[in-house]
Length: 282
Picture 1 (cartoon, rainbow, N blue to C red):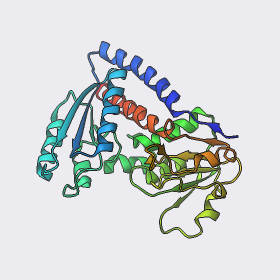
Picture 2: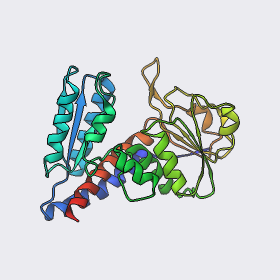
Picture 3: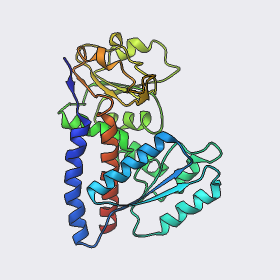
Picture 4: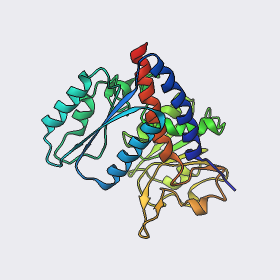
């Protein structure tokens, strides 16, 4: 029977420690502040933004929200980011994705001052991650690494398989695992013989966005399974990218959905905002 990796409990522990750090910063007249931009009316984004606001409140981080209409122009978005860049009291800027198709998300990410890029998407921060330098790491991969650390899972020498090559999860988690001396295989929609590759994984990260995609016969006994997916089923319940109920008696460790990687993503966002505020102090 797999050990359930409780991301929710770990996130609470991290946020409690952050609250203490924020209190110390406030004694030095530094109040960590996050600005979140959301464009359009994506329902899932509204939930994520609300959760980020709530977490900021719990940690003691000040929070500003910019809800822009669907018809916002690219220049209007860039101008807003430029204004936020210029404000010294704002330490972190986050652009909630997805944004409407007529906007250039890559240009927007690049416009965010990389010192305030608490999502870790700016090319400078991505480059620093690849080069093994101190940087802002994308919140979901960062959260995954913290979960593995919390459960005392040694990464060195392990075969880690990542399903999904997104810039948000797949690519950065591969870099994080590589930095910890794992042997990393990246799989995607064009990968052949996927099952034979996943069956050799000591650590399997599923970040593909397909409901219950990873089946029991795709993992080896005792594998460490990290499920990044959040999919809404026909009955309205959430499920991940793995067939959790059937994997639980074969995996060694597994993250649940919800309550696994999701809460950790927000906890690491809070961590990055506090780090940005400390960087200003230093």
